[in-house]
Length: 422
Image 1 (tube, rainbow, N blue to C red):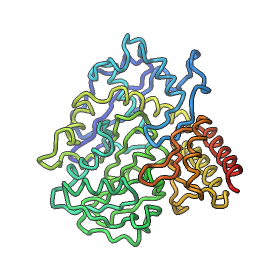
Image 2: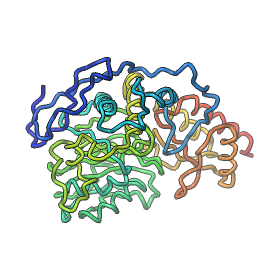
Image 3: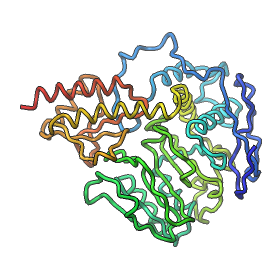
Image 4: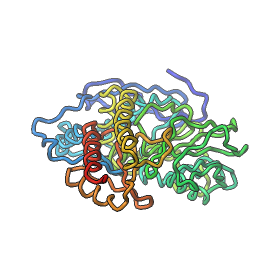
């Protein structure tokens, strides 16, 4: 058992490992102010997702390259399908359960436990399941971490970082210490060249820019010893291992890699809880949600359940190190095809910071882009049109995109080039 010196200790699961869902406690037994915690692995009657015998075949499915809501693992969808009508003999669907009943409590507690396992989340961090998307966190972060006159630093590597900065300007004094806007967001700065604000309360980054395809491969360190690193990791959350202890706060919308839209996950260090600005709306106050174990109001129950199934699946794959290897392989195949096309396909992003999750590319002949998207859709590869703000194409190849999907895409790209590169 670990003892923390922080003024506020995160909620503990304090659950004995069990193979029977019915034996979960009906309430979390820890008070918000207790100083000791124990996180134990929780197991269900089946931690390996099995494809039901009556499942529809994958030939009915398209390869969905959407940026979000995005593709979900097929076996997770089939598992949810098999449990939709009557979850584990409860006589109810997860969508019908009381969020305070023992059945749903077992679901959310296990989801948290599995996420802690995946990311090796330290015990002095809370895991909160919230709503409102990452966009709501653009306001919640400054409201909880600083006062109206406090300076904070933002590195802006794309549209989402820019939106976060603009929202923060309503609640504190943010400063953009680097922006890639003038170069159309194709790079990430050298950390040594950053001029951080000495008194900044936190340094904010967007770990992966979904629209522009720029991803941090390493993370900056705040030069102010009292400052925090805060990251929006919506589009690369759980795509690779992350040292959570380097961050004061991580937030992510679930609809890219770990679940359907409607769930937002916040991982926050315990000593940062309880300092919200006086005018902070109750639904944006992390302390309220931590005190109530993410159950202050009715949470997105079915979405959390789906996240839990995804976490099980990621663990079954061998954890995030193994998941990262698969993601690297998929991205390499796609980038190699772009690079080897002799300019027919082009990715504008600087090579060293190209995203493993979102691959934007254009054609040397822009007039062919609409035809490319149309023909791909006929081949059951959908949502390849680029974001409206940048145009071109974009292939989002999140965790759940199988290697076969990327291989089919590159085969189509090579065929398309052979027919049109004249």
